[in-house]
Amino acid sequence: MTIIRLITLTLTLMITMIITTVTSHNITDILSNFPEYSVYNDYLTKTRLNDEINSHETVTVLVLNNNMTTKLGANEPLAVMKTVLSIHVLLDFFDREKLLKIGGGSQVSTTLYQTTGHALQDTGYVNITDLPGGKVGFGSGNARSKLGSLFVKDVKEFPYNISVLEINSPIIAPGILNTPWIPVNISSLLENAGCKIFLKMLKEQGVLTVYEGAVNSDITVFAPSDDAFNKVLGLPEFKKLQPRELISLLYYHAIPTYVPKASLASEKNKNVTTFATTPIQNFYFTIKSSGDSFIVDTGVDVVRIENTIIDASPVSIFKIENVLLPIELFNGTSISTPAPAPAAPTPESSRSAPGPVSTDSSSTSGPAGGPDQADGPDADVGDNNANDASDGKHDTRSLLVDTR
Ligand SMILES: *[C@@H]1O[C@H](CO)[C@@H](O)[C@H](O)[C@H]1NC(C)=O
Ligand SMILES: *[C@@H]1O[C@H](CO)[C@@H](O)[C@H](O)[C@H]1NC(C)=O
Ligand SMILES: *[C@@H]1O[C@H](CO)[C@@H](O)[C@H](O)[C@H]1NC(C)=O
Ligand SMILES: *[C@@H]1O[C@H](CO)[C@@H](O)[C@H](O)[C@H]1NC(C)=O
Ligand SMILES: *[C@@H]1O[C@H](CO)[C@@H](O)[C@H](O)[C@H]1NC(C)=O
Ligand SMILES: *[C@@H]1O[C@H](CO)[C@@H](O)[C@H](O)[C@H]1NC(C)=O
Ligand SMILES: *[C@@H]1O[C@H](CO)[C@@H](O)[C@H](O)[C@H]1NC(C)=O
Image (cartoon, rainbow, N blue to C red; front, top):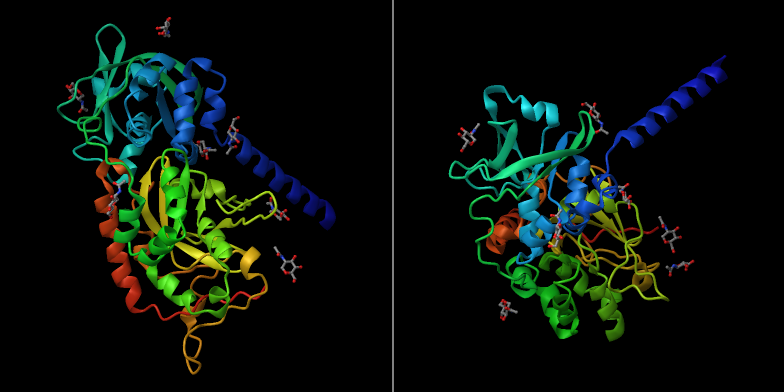
């Protein structure tokens, strides 16, 4: 009897899991059945808005055909396209039926852009208005905007989770396309974010040039803070590194993929290829979650991702709490604290370990989806400095010891 019950319970659990998996939507997959939106679909993938769309339970995606999307993207940097397209993702469910009978004839819907915390003056909202003759108009929620986009047709619906609707022209919020574009400058970003030692090493070893050369393809950099480097510089294992190995260590801190904060969850528990990866040496690490934070597990140490320094698709830079120690260079090394011998281990020495890590609320205070380039790098850097100040004071923990 007990066994049968157990089996029944297991089966029920499995079925529940299967159902959960099946009902979760995948915008890339949905749009792949419609070649007329393939350019739009590519942009969602490149900007990784697809991950954000998939992570929202209830969402409506306003798509544009290939001609419209190509025209829109022709003169816009990818980071600006990300902002524009995030205004086309409504955090509510609208199908044709609902569109045609909007109460009072007009409604405002929140968009994905609003969740970034960077939307100014209602640009994070979209106005949907029923027009004479059975037409539906869309415009920016900003008061100055016109209803310049018209509903064309419903493309695909999975009530009440995801709906895809075509509109005939993009919804352009004021100020989004006209902001001057500042190219990502890795040097100045790292410098202002308190990662000067990392920057100095990147320059000295010629690695910076490689990272800078990648800002137009995909790159994510994990930049250790100066505090983090000060903890390892004195280690015998670090001093022993050959120049070639030091270069590998620096290459190990970036990956040839664009991973904004909102996509960290999609990268979890995989072997992540880094710039140090070669056909003969893995130099992988693994991203894991720990409470509200994400951590990088190298197999030697476990390092918390502190915050976003910049998210400007296709470039993402995170600040991290410790230096990433690849197993290829530090295997078997038991890294002990460089602090003077009498120092007793403090509870804080386990701060970077998996599990509920931090009581430091500033670490997770970034806006959902991370900062975004349209607002310029300076605002983000300001945040980081605030974090540094609050972190540096009580940072007496030793480098995490992991003797696996
Ligand atoms: C679909 O929507 C329903 C409620 O409308 C919700 O309970 C369910 O979790 C959603 N499914 C997914 C996979 O988001
Ligand atoms: C979504 O669908 C695309 C295309 O079918 C596939 O490559 C991708 O792995 C899927 N993503 C997830 C999270 O399942
Ligand atoms: C897209 O543009 C091409 C060439 O300008 C044109 O032939 C085609 O009809 C357009 N398609 C749509 C859906 O507007
Ligand atoms: C939507 O825009 C129209 C036209 O500008 C305006 O008349 C209407 O009040 C707006 N609706 C809402 C809910 O703001
Ligand atoms: C990046 O900023 C630094 C100052 O931090 C400056 O010296 C350098 O010229 C800038 N690089 C580019 C390509 O603008
Ligand atoms: C990661 O790489 C290691 C070493 O090559 C391998 O043993 C392991 O199975 C891989 N894990 C995953 C999840 O691919
Ligand atoms: C690490 O060291 C152990 C024991 O010496 C060895 O079995 C293992 O293959 C090494 N791993 C790597 C990635 O070098």
